[in-house]
Image (cartoon, rainbow, N blue to C red; front, side, top):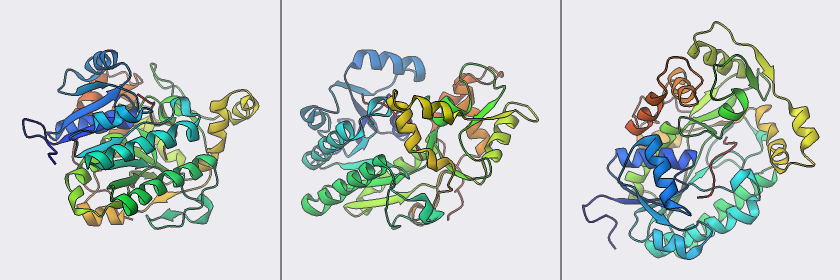
Length: 363
């Protein structure tokens, strides 16, 4: 079976390309010489939006829906990898949407022979069970979404053992970056489109939190994709990303990036979310994951570093600068620099060895 295009480049199907993680992975793949194909319900509009944000590219836009089995099977034809970057829209109806979309992706991988790459998170774990988690740590989720995540990974394990469908899971923390407008950084801590005059922090400032800068995560995923033939049929890695020991450290770094000695930090209005939860589905979903802001949960990436030799790691200050510039929060007038940085898919020094709140929408 051929895994390359007519010009010899390897082919990757990226679903959810217009979302945060899918966009970052698509840009990283293009920068490494891959041909990228994507599935979208309105490919003409999506192509135009992509061109406005990142410029023209060789991406192949295919009309279809991730919820449609035939669409995914057709789009995966000839692909070497399938990156599963779709999530339920508006952070709702996880069981109704997420399970069937992944089921179709597994079938597409089975028929095409591609390896399915799945971005995991920390929902699988009981944060109270430990502080640092390896890939083999017991999975005892305490939330509905965590249970669904465990089921989804089990679907991949079963497909590997029963049908030799190859897959790769890379678990990471809360996403942020130039391609991720739907994130806790963008929709919780700061207000996009204006200078930062205060920070609204959703957790205990003395508790650590795990973050994943998307250009780094995308570069790591592409590194793994380039060596996927060396992996077993089902494999899991942890991406450590930016483990920030205390929330006040993140707030202080944001202040430095903004050129301020200090920026007022306010408490996130969880009381308002609690009051609105009976009426607003998104509020109920956010409340369910609140515990991740009050309990430290760090990912051990020693297995990843042992395999790749390093984990791509952009210094926190630079990562925040690029992200806040893309959100229109900095005065320097270099918003475009953020998107150029993602296009470059930089390789950086390894992070020390040792989730995601809003990841992207269905295409």
